[in-house]
Length: 103
Image (cartoon, rainbow, N blue to C red; front, side, top):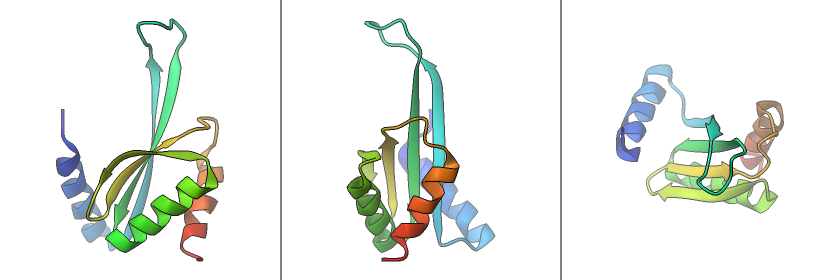
């Protein structure tokens, strides 16, 4: 399994190749079960990659909106957030991301 630092290097390489300054990646894990629950759980995570100042601003903005919880936070422009409402689609999340750059 790849570690967070390896993922960060890959994301930065992709961003450099495409000329992108900020990247928000939504992920979804379906079918995770716990030992105490038999029902299927779905989890959504948001990965933010970019300049540290931009990532920090968007990270804090998304936390203030109440739709995300802090996940693994890695300094230098790389952080994970856990989406509380897994039914929120990219059409709902994208405007939130855009709003963090308007402030």
